Amino acid sequence: MKSKFRTRDFKEKKLRGEKIAMLTAYDANMAHLLDRAGVDAILVGDSVGMVVLGFENTVPVTLDAMVHHTAAVSRGTERALIVADMPFLTYQTTAADAVRNAGRLMQEGGAEAVKVEGGSAIVDVVKRLVDVGIPVMGHLGLPPQSVHQVGGFLRQATTPHDADILLADALALEEAGVFAIVLEAIPGDVARTVTTALAIPTIGIGAGKDCSGQVLVLHDMLDIYPGRKARFVKNFLAGASGVQDAIRRYVEAVKSGAFPAPEHSF
Ligand code: KIV
Image 1 (spheres, rainbow, N blue to C red):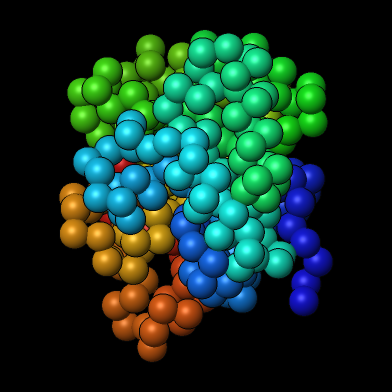
Image 2: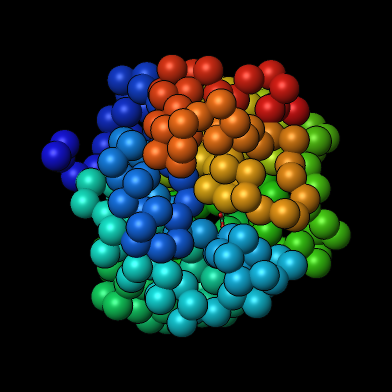
């Protein structure tokens, strides 16, 4: 087995110009397939609410559900870094709530890092998490937990003003200590500017080819989710010999820079 992928490997990969391949998983069996295929990091996304539990968005996902799925993923994973999403309102209230709730994801779920959505508004919470020894991944651009405020799953940072705010948020998160930032549904040139401005890596989902790595929702890239499909998603099961082969093809395509292609970008 290759050595365990750690948060520090994110930055080292960016320095070496090597792309980071990340995918979501929610159970032990799929986590094992991702791990075997060489995925660097597994995101136990709160997208579990949509692609596994049948909700319309991620808002109803509870901390108990995330702990349950994170623990399952931990049991199936040896090498990949396990990042667990902190669900809606488990970190936006107080820093003390955030520490307690992230602690459950790590102690009961076996998460090795947590992911939170938002920029300047949550910087104090991020600092507190990092200060107590919890690795944090940021998430900017489309914030799925704020779907009701945003008014849908819409592209973000499409004006120069909004792109400037996104860059300021990214710099604030880096300063607060996050080890990487997911950039979701933003124009490729904005993602490139942010990626160049940061020392830490960016992980794109619908953010073009110039991010330091890519992430997709597993059920989207296998085309087994009947809901709406975003333009940036590619079906890797088409043409593959099975699920394991599809995941391997995704990892190769990310690492070689073949994915995302222009048709998967804005
Ligand atoms: O929950 C999730 O799967 C995510 C990805 C969309 C990055 O946050």
